[in-house]
Length: 275
Image (cartoon, rainbow, N blue to C red; front, side, top):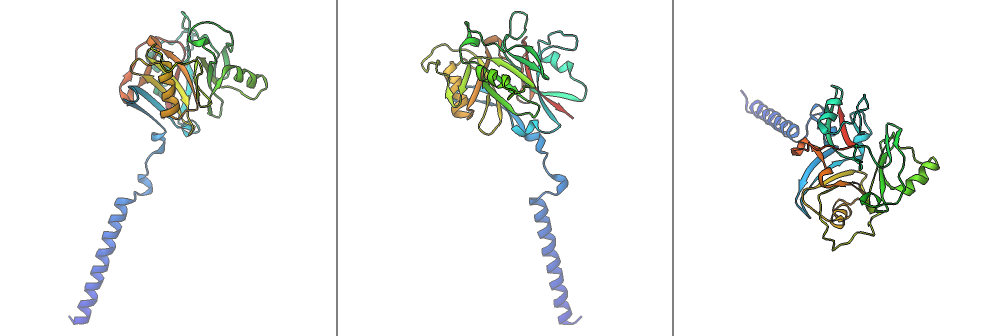
C-alpha cells in the first residue's frame, strides 16, 4: 500500500471516530423527542417545610387546570345526597379512570357537616353567600370566597366584593367555597390580626399567588393568625389568601408526602387526575 493511500485511510478513520463520539455526546446531553419529560407531571407538587414554622404545602400551577388531565373540584355529597365526610369515601366515589392527587378540607361546616358559607358545585348553588355578622372565625370580617369559573382561573375574593360581581354578572363561579377570615387581602395582612397574639392553633388555608399558582397549606404546629398570614404574604408571595379551618377540622390528603388524614369534614377541595 502506498504511503499516500495509507495516510488518506487514516484520516478517514479519524474523521469517522470524531463524528461518532460527537454524536454520542450530543445524544447524551440532548434527549430525543421520544425522551422528552412529561410536563404534566410537574404542574403540581407537595412538600414539607420547616421554616418559618413546620408546615405542609401543595402547589398547583395555573396551567394545571387548562388541559384535559387535571380538574380541581369541590366535593360534598355522593350521588345519593349522602355527605362523603372523609377522603377515603371521596376516593371510593371516583370513577375508575380517575384518581385523587391531593385534597384538603374546604370551608367551615355545621354539626351536620353542611357548609355554613357560599358553596357552588358545578355551577349549582348549594348555599347562598353569607354576609351576616356574628362570632367566630368565619365572621371575623372581612371573610372571603375561593372560587373558579369554567376556564379554571382560580381567585380569592372578599365576600362583599364577590356579591357585587355576581349581581353585575361579572363573576360566574363554577365552584366556590366561602370561609373566613381572609388572611391576606390585596397584599395586606388582615387588619385585625395581632403580631403578638398568643392564640396558637393548627391552621390550614389557601392562597392565590403572584405567579397565578394556588397554595394549599397545613401548619404542622400551632401558629397565630398573624404568623400564618405572614407565611402566605412573605414566603409564598400570595397577595390574597383565605383561612379554611383549624384544629381538628384541618385535614390534608397528599400521598406524595405521606399525608392521609382520617378526619371527618364537610366540603373538600380535591385535585383529580384523569388518565
